[in-house]
Image (cartoon, rainbow over the protein chains, first blue to last red):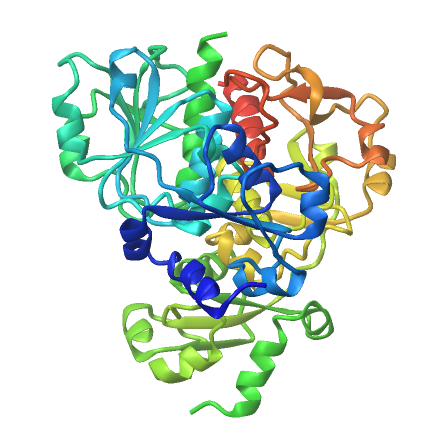
Length: 249
Length: 249
């Protein structure tokens, strides 16, 4: 049995200020909740149907709910047997940059679906850290968490002012960004480590960040004519990460 | 001044059976409507605000609407000055396959956002035809049309049973698909033409279609450990198209 107050509490966590105040985020469905638990996250509350509990042994405290109760708790159109609240992890440090890894910096990405998809892409391509400008949409937004399909359990997300991040980097650290006036990504030399900057959906990379990009890349189009097309930011991220990793084979 | 019946008529076109009966689809916003008109599509009805009309000379019949009226017509959360109804184009033929072009076949892609994004990717990479299995979501669904950002004006969409499509191909026509047990896409030889098959979000490529794939490809992951990750179908399409086109440079 769940109370109206419990439902209200969960729904309040849709709002960033409540997530921040409570230091909690919502995850739903076996894939996302399961990946978080497997990665060491411990839920403060876990609501699950009898069906889920019978199929997934779970030895910590939980609240069994009916499908109707889950539907009232859930933010999803199609609730998926389990919903849990997890503590938002510590922001962590920017140690990855010292270790000569490949990382991503997002400069004001606004769409939760795009951020979630980019986190999933980073996970696939073994990129362990994504830096987000403070104007980027909150990664603990439930729409982002669900769009990551569990990858948020394995990728570190660090919110930081890009200028502050750059100040921590060696002067010769390679910083890549895609621009319409960049050099063809397919034929440029790419270092096995560095920072890949991706910009805002409408405005691209901001001028202050652009000024610090050391390697301007272009994903060339292959269509006839000069129609003003563009690639979605998550698609551009995927193509860029694919191209960096291909070189390491 | 628009009537309740006009609003009702537009909203009915959200449903596939009404689109089919009327042979019309809805497009909204200057980018999508403008790209369709530029590609030779002629709206049967165009509703526009005074602001849009003053900025975009339009010499055919239109209905001027207020922002309030547009909001009532629109299917979007943020209406964008213009909404138009266009005839659904003829399905066209599978001529592209004879011309040794690169084409895409979608095997039961279900999500409108994914289909729209894939159409946009095809446009970017100069792929002029997408074949859709009859179980694939309708390309004239307003969510698909908007997600293409205008690219639907430039890519031919042909609904066809994949087995019927295969029967029209020469026996040695290259058919590519991505599978978990495929060969590394980055190191395989890729022909400059052929059919790239992408599968359903949950189930991948169906067995009947898989049996006809001549080149099984794998997009390798680069992460540590064996977490069961996957790539979104639109992301996998982007990486595959990028890799095919890169080889042609």
